[in-house]
Length: 291
Ligand SMILES: Nc1ncnc2c1ncn2[C@@H]1O[C@H](COP(=O)(O)OP(=O)(O)OP(=O)(O)O)[C@@H](O)[C@H]1O
Image (cartoon, rainbow, N blue to C red; front, side, top):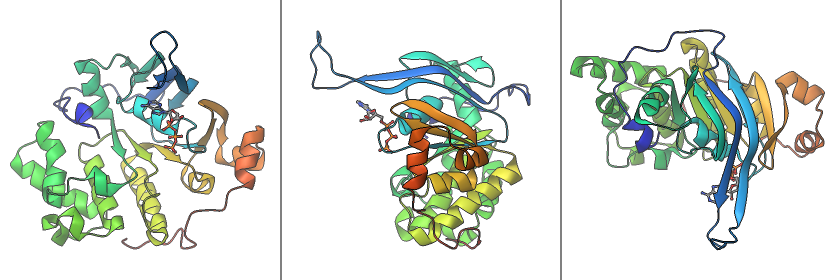
């Protein structure tokens, strides 16, 4: 998670009421336009990264966002985790309008979601031990006392299938799969309602991708988490998602259950994606084991 979100505050404030009908995240007609450096003040060159996206993430569900490079997936993820303010449209977290990302909004965002990024090597601090990386969000957000945090760290490391012996290790002493497990443990440390996983397996060796996907699915089920899973690989998205949103040119061109999108795609672009998609997953998909 970004410093902006991580530093945003104590998480022990009263949580919003749990309501099965209230979306965890509601993006209402989001548009994000960037000015590129090549234009002038009078004639700016604009990139319309997201051009009017409406999306609801309900408690416990997994939405997969899929599309080619440049279609606006990461910009959407950044809006969802408060890193990017939309040019227009509104963002609601559990019914609260957090579009303006005030300090109070960021506290809500920090409590509700965590992000797992593509490359655990850059997401983790190379100079901190695993133990310190897992402690850090709880210290920043002033959660619990020392004993609670130590206990939580042990719980987290067990949840992600790593031995306690890795707690003293630095990220550079671990494999890519182990590092991503640590990044997932870190994302879970504040007990979020939802995780945004932005291409969480793309930087990993093909042999460990399935293990990390299965871990995410198991944790999601066990902890009742909602998830937004972002990938350019439609087969991976199918494997993990309840609902799929296909993006093209900053727009959601198709949305439906995995079954609807695969068996009865309505949009031409979805058909092209399906036709052109060799799976990036390893044939071991579905098998367990620590990466
Ligand atoms: N900060 C920025 N300034 C200018 N243009 C940007 C910026 N961030 C993204 N873009 C542009 O917005 C469009 C959408 O980018 P985005 O990263 O959201 O796509 P993506 O689907 O996540 O692609 P990828 O899979 O390659 O990350 C692209 O044309 C990109 O070049």
